[in-house]
Image (cartoon, rainbow, N blue to C red; front, side, top):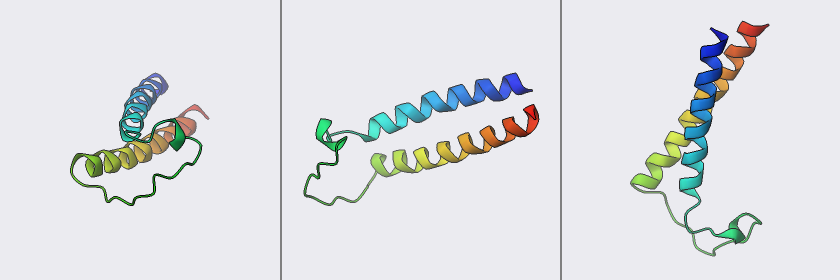
Length: 73
């Protein structure tokens, strides 16, 4: 059971990393250090869907992590 949870965590982590990297479009290296672009944009279409997917994947990852700790302990 613990092996399946670990595999699920790895898969979700890889998908979560990909989703986060796809969101960093247009920010460049300056976005890492807090440089602001000066414009405010609303999320629409694919960008909004990707943002919501990131939140859902993060919640699933946290739930699986807590469940894995319960099973292991």
